[in-house]
Amino acid sequence: MSECLSTLAAKPTLRVAGLMSGTSADGIDAAIVEIGRRGVRVLAFDMFPYPPSVRRRIFALFDPRRARVDDLCHLNFLLGEFFADALTRLAKKHGLPLSSIDAIGSHGQTVCHLPRGRRFRGRVFKSTLQIGEPAVIAERTGVTTIADFRTRDIAAGGEGAPLVPFADHFLFRHKTRNRSLQNIGGIANLTYLPAACSVTDVIAFDTGPGNMMMDRATFLLTRGRQTYDVGGKLAARGRVIQPLLAELMRHKFLSRRPPKTTGREEFGVQFTDAFCARAKRKGIAPPDILATLTAFTAGSIANAHRRYLPGPVDEVILCGGGARNRTLVAMLEKELHPARVLPMDAFGINADAKEAISFAILAYATIRGMANNVPSATGAARAVVLGKIVRGTC
Image 1 (spheres, rainbow, N blue to C red):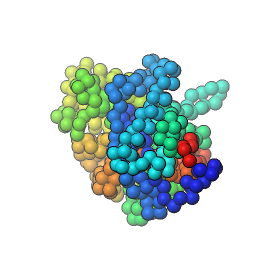
Image 2 (cartoon, one colour):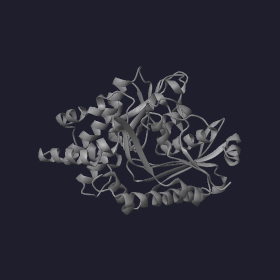
Image 3 (tube, one colour):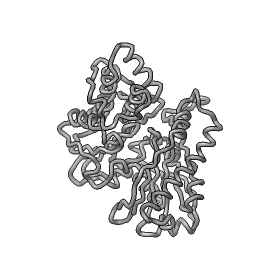
Image 4 (cartoon, rainbow, N blue to C red):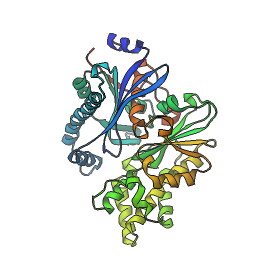
């Protein structure tokens, strides 16, 4: 380890920024936290939307029929600039000099994730790709940047996801309560923390679609006037069409045993558009389509809790954008009873900030030389230190 990184690793408390752009690709979540012996203290958080033109270009990369390698190359560096700018603006807004930040943990923007792999010469090779060039972030901010967290886990035989269980254990383990951390971003994923657990006891996996299908359906059904169902108001006007819900609940991903991950390749635009087209041909009203997709997200989450957890859950803690969807939350409360369903805000952490905070924690562990994947969640052969380090100005 270089002298610069050794100095960082020796500090009792680190100020770390976390940067995250999720599967919804609506913008960059940026958080600045202090991490030390007393835990995590959030100093700043905000979300910085992408310009519509940039979001459209990111979505073009999600579609193998439209993606171009020159666009991929360009957007990798362009998003690096956006990530650096988001942190610069956040720090300035809260009066925190960039020079006071010890490290940055950047998830980047996933454009392709193939955890089940593809066969080549008799072997299966898994892969994943995140863009948002960390060298650009380090150069613009002067801050040591850790990125590309998923790739080392895949190299160690894992699926490269989920990564947040390490942070979940760091933040939310409890001496007497069994807890489930349910993130509802574009994809939904859970972390199960049995009472008094060590990190090796953690179970985590993707449960299926989160907001992804609901967001796409909202865009289609409102003809682009809305990109997501604010508060679940549109779904609240509809009724769940049970035969359609039963069809969705037969999706093969839901019956796969963990560890498992998923993404746009299974629940993205193509799958959602085909579902909405079939429903419209049957004469089903738009609010009913959206209510059914909302019930699918709730049902797939409940299915994961019932089938794949070894014991009961006392508290289900919600985070991610879906935690703001009141219709979805009401469905979850019914499906997951008698567990208490609570927003993460009730624990003093902004539910929207959770994933950005998680990547700050992952970067903190990398600087400390701590293994920060969770093999029981990703399926990796061993615990490894995640992330590629780009030195800042020391």
